[in-house]
Length: 239
Image 1 (cartoon, rainbow, N blue to C red):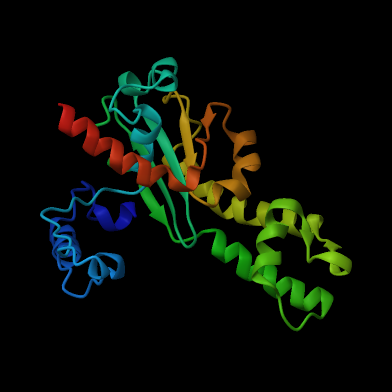
Image 2: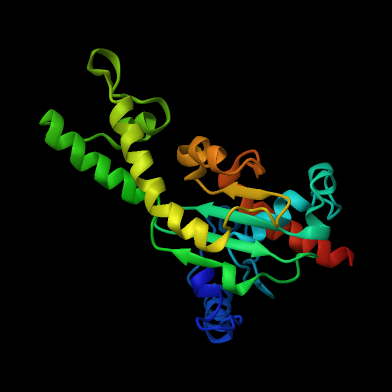
């Protein structure tokens, strides 16, 4: 998260002490066991280096670059390299917002941060509400996930339309997020695009589209950060 990757204060800097500890931990593979390699008498994998990148920031590079480290069509059409972009990354427990400066090499520290609020908070509140309003003893995780996307809870003869309740909870969560978005991205008039990623974007995407007209939602947006990490390394290797 942005709040972990960068230090707090007026001037955000990379949290070098925490990042170093993270690298040291990930480079230690003494407890890693690969059953396939062992069965084939293959040597244990050896990690010689590990890089730590910031969430949300990496999603910018996912949209900007292709798998070969070149600027994408959407990157060119929105002029993302020349003018930067904003990124909203809605996760389970946190929401990250970053405003990327032109060139992608830095971010606007005054307008970037992390809010400790995400989709899992919505799910817990909805779960408790369903227990109270329907007097149900147990709430199925699979059915709850389905209801967030379709408004229908349950399966077979147990299907119940809870779309109004789901929408109410989505609106309530967005209201809590909106002040954070206003303090970071604002009206987005100074950025060519806002990139929306993370698993929570499936749930709140339609609402956020109504707020920002220059919104980009990549395909399989829950993997956008991971793809961005890869593309950064490819671009660095080609440079």
